[in-house]
Image (cartoon, rainbow, N blue to C red):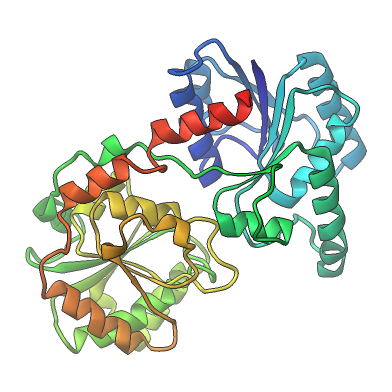
Length: 374
């Protein structure tokens, strides 16, 4: 089997990280398969070495997509020369544009993979964006054999229907659950973050942008500090709302209870050493899946989330507290209750449940292999 994946580039993106992990895991199942990654950005990424070491190939587009005709011509030449069995495009609505290059070329299967719900195209003009969205979806649907969603909601947002047809599939992201076979290092983590030994950590992890809504955590923290002085909010990630978080904390005079270390190298240890996971994603558009929510469950963390997280991501309902964004005081009161009680399920039990779920890396790789073979 020869497979070509069309991606941005193999760098920091969640999609590409998942895909590289799935590729490496799939080598255990089908080591003879030939995988190629076509990177539309035309530049190297930090995951390239891992791909090559595992036997994968990488092709960098020498033409940007702004030069539409030249881009499609190069991609079409690559597709023809490669004689691939599978073409798998990972760019949601823009996949319709890429798949134009495959028209008339014989493949065993064409896959269009929808990873997000935000209906985005890299077009600067909003009017042009809205005009192109429907045609790109139509072209992508017509030129693909199977449309894959990372959740039921993601698929429904793209297809316009909650019905899962014969040409549709759900493929959940898989993560390496063995990464969470680590002990909590509460003292070490608090020392690294310059926190008091007995402090309680509210953990936010993810992009710090408007949709992820990190500023709301500051509002929750303000109310929670009125109930108990031992709580600190730790923000893992980066984005255009980093400064807003600090500015709001300064306004509320609680900056001493905020930590922003940026991206953190050992997320499993940090999660297992925290007390509560807080992810106040705005409720529409919903998160495509919320891989960080899956990871929080693997760590056994109580989670405070919104309906912006799709139900597919909730494997352990005992850990999930779903609230609206109308009342940060209510969030604070509920978090305080959770901090005053023992966990409803042990971290060991949580991890075991996640290892037996569809989000386990090996299970996700087998599901992808099954899609290709059938």
